[in-house]
Image (tube, rainbow, N blue to C red; front, side):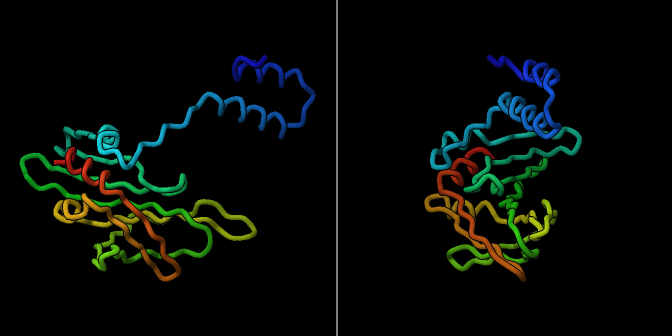
Length: 187
């Protein structure tokens, strides 16, 4: 019976095995130690509110709010975030998108919601994931600057939007319960 990764390592060190097998066995043993974080029910306002990260920076005098990942696959990121500067009533809101895809760079530069509203798009970064003989995978990080009023207007329905670029587009969705929960925390 294997008790932990150390037991596996001891067994492998006594084995006359190829290095690849040693690596795979070690990776499997160590991966058993890490449990994936449970996914938040994005249609449950209380669950979403409990998963919102609130961080205070005493040096910059700003409070940051970040909702849980609302992307429908493990490779993308989608969440609402906000910043509140001390001594002001102003809060800046942004929908953050990290889209992972294969193929040519898409060069995202615009976004529209399902009601035809143009959403101000800010490029955050572009990264190459990996490359092989068939091509490369890419990550594009984009911020959609929105107002509290825009979010409030959509909290009873949802926000469905498309980001577009020269070589592609992708559709994302944020449930109304998620938006409602975020607005209840980020004030």
